[in-house]
Length: 162
Image (cartoon, rainbow, N blue to C red):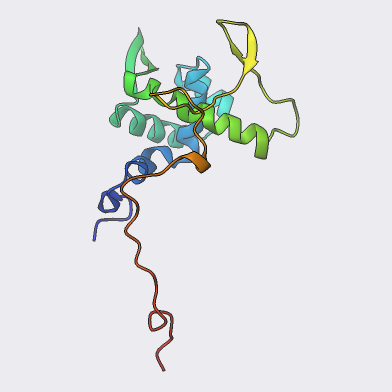
């Protein structure tokens, strides 16, 4: 069987994303990047994360192709972290987490941030929509194909041997 971080045996895109996106620091680093943070010191200051952990997470995000580095100072060498196209594609994920968090885990010490749609100037939230017809996607109007091949447990599967 694969190692603990290798979930490819599940044959699932979500499982394949977990090693990089399932880390709380990586998600918060991405949040900051979408809000304009690019430099190590700024990530560290905003998140209050230990430098060694931040360095490790940024290295992982670069290795995964989510960030690329660009030198902004040569003596001493300093780099900033910029989202790649692959990284920019995570915007929908972060917006979905934002929407869920505002509903189920809002910040206690201040009002939630507002997402303003620049085209119309109004506050908005992400709504998943069908790429074909534009209809809203909900659990009640979706089917995933092919489904999971889960085998029902039999009564003999649940018995404890004597």
